[in-house]
Length: 270
Length: 52
Image 1 (cartoon, each protein chain N blue to C red):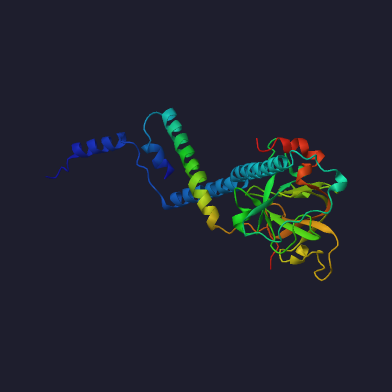
Image 2 (image 1 turned 120 degrees about the vertical axis):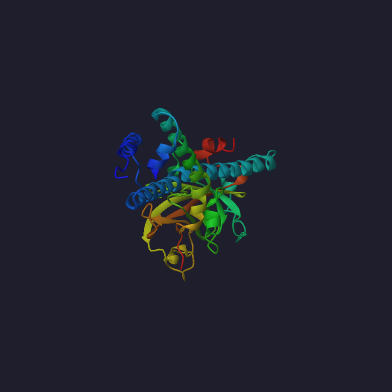
């Protein structure tokens, strides 16, 4: 057998030519595709965290807070349905609630018209005791009160924290504050109207901003302040942006919400 | 990898494109619903508070 079957070989070659080309899987090719996939996944995650989940949380936090506010308003109306609403001169000194609450318990509602967007109306937030992730990353609260700092309306410093980006971003628009912007805090006792005073940019360790007189821990307070803390710059945690406000007025729950926001508040909880 | 996926899909090109889009949508849905919330609990949390 000197002839190695040329006929068979030719047929095999013809068949090979008809077969679709073999796809070679190269290691470099697979690594490249894996890297591309990882890149896409990370971008998707950031999109989810900073926009998708942020919007969902903002909407849920705001509607929970609005419902809480509406419930308090309803209670106040029910309790005082017979008596006429008190006149401004009868409001007296701001009522201050308990000195502390169990960690994670919501006790106040914050509404800052400057934070509101005309499209979404999702800027109302519940304030809960504590500044752990159980409060700040919660679908129901989003703003945390620093334990040990004062309560709404109290002489001293009512200090709170919230995310600036992601997780509902309760203080996302904080840098838009203008002098005198109202910060409304509602508790079951009534409404506290603070006015924005000034910003401060500090390092994350600057706990003195929480003092009853910020930066002067030994001084006896005389003013009723609110301090908002969040991260800075936007999308970074390198620094903290602090916004201070001063209490302007207070209304007992029986008097209803401040006139400037009565129309907005009336739409809540529906 | 993705070349193999393309060849595994049956039918003409237009059908493969539709199937591929469905696969992508299902993947993104699974990521957004289960994977990302899980990952979010693990990765370094964003810190916004002043603390010592």
